[in-house]
Image 1 (cartoon, rainbow, N blue to C red):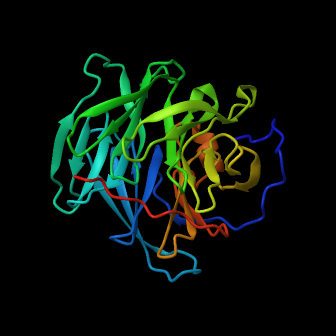
Image 2 (image 1 turned 120 degrees about the vertical axis):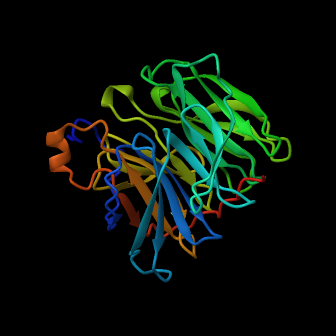
Length: 312
């Protein structure tokens, strides 16, 4: 994939980015660290797979471990650990529970039965254990047909934001006062005021934007303990760190032009894990990027906030 044709706002940080698992995912996404299991979960949503990566490392070491893969009967787009064991997941059109150790899959609810041309995309739990996941057009990725939902232990989806052009990365500031949300094909990352107790959003405003003419778009994101936002930007093949005012603070280039999402993990929450995809690459481009679809890791001199499992 040609990454030329754009100008970096700042020079990329020279930092080694290591391939830790050659998963060859069609569409690797939704990485999340499980502190309880000391492992990374992520999905290959078009491959209908969940990967569980267990690094055998001490803080500061280069991760090197094993990958277990679990096959699903449907597209799986987002994932989070569950307090009662197993995982909560977003399938093609349903919220569901999945136990990777037994293979048990429990379908819960489809919030959009009247929108068969939509599917889920990214998701994550807030710090009260509610699972947030958004939808998008299956084929019309750039149409304003997506909706962001909040899904709690009562199993009732709550519509929060509609008219979304591809719901994507999401996370919360360390003080739980700001919610960040990537709308990929509006080429924007939004910030909202967030009420932790109620889960309500207000005061939507622009946090950061990419130039649509350059081809890249905001994908998955995570927030570090200093309140900086790290965003995967496919086509550019980079992870961009924004300060709390939306200014670019750092750029880390990855070996995959279609890096899709990022999260912090390991015992010290000091390793950044990055998923990637190959679904938009031609066979010739895949040959030139043999690690496309892999899981990568680097040590960014920043730490993440441990995730909270789904409260149900």
